[in-house]
Image (cartoon, rainbow, N blue to C red; front, side, top):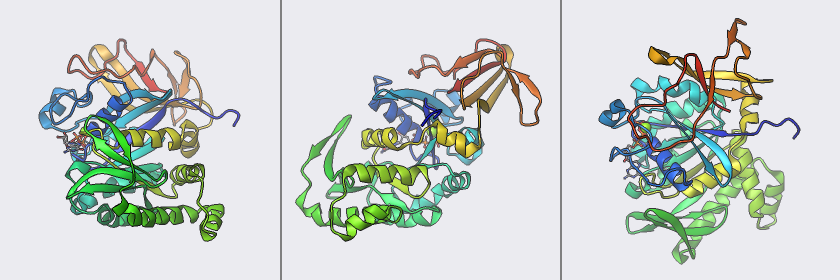
Length: 361
Ligand SMILES: Nc1nc2c(ncn2[C@@H]2O[C@H](COP(=O)(O)OP(=O)(O)OP(=O)(O)O)[C@@H](O)[C@H]2O)c(=O)[nH]1
Ligand SMILES: [Mg+2]
């Protein structure tokens, strides 16, 4: 499309405190090759939560920002604190994201904790997925979790995977779109295996349910299903992408941030299905270049540092901007968001000059 905005896609991680958002960001950075060690917030060696406050509290106290490239495409992550006392810190940045991932615990008894995040995403019309984390600790059925979560979502939840279990433990998953089974390997990409024969009926039932959900918004697919034809994977993935971008359905994937399980599958889903900056510009009613500030730091040698996302085109240093009340503001020094590295010091990113802007564009 001519004039379509391209560039870094911004992913927000939201959900209850302790669900594993900062851990998932770490796992995504590691799986994408942005960092060479898979740290953990539990062990105090994660890229995010590097401030003394977050380390001693054992949870995020402010929003962590990261960026990475995956298979040649650029992404930034906004990792918002889940704890109520700190949740306002991430709200503005989350509202500017192209897509959000709601990170939840597999225990249905804790499902209600995801309600505030799900409500906020629905209210703002922000496309989102659900990632059921801590699958290494899951005991119950994912179906029961989805039944508990569904009332919190305006759109239907679409299970895209079913678990493979050995005894009580989840040891892998079947991707329902690809009809491929994978076995988790700690610290390594999952290995493809043949679909366990005892899962064949369950897989067929779950896949049919997923396809029927997609057919609610795709007459061609509905016709194929009625005629007992097997749809092409391309059709299924295009429908899944549209369900997400148009807020028609919420894809559900699962895994374990701590073990890196299901994280490459999640990255691939984001790569193929996350909407880009143009959708967000449309959602926010942005026409032409606009700078959206989401956090301001004042004081000391820093002067004023404004973290912002630029949408709608380039903005030069020194440009005159208008605030929502049409007051003129001169843009100071501008510094693009630097590549994420494991922090050497415990300090968050700081600016080098007064009135700096740091932007994701
Ligand atoms: N067993 C297990 N533990 C996990 C997993 N993911 C995260 N954890 C642990 O859960 C705890 C909380 O993880 P965080 O990533 O800090 O959670 P968070 O969602 O960022 O929490 P807030 O920042 O407070 O909102 C840490 O001790 C992690 O090591 C997982 O997949 N399996
Ligand atoms: Mg966190």
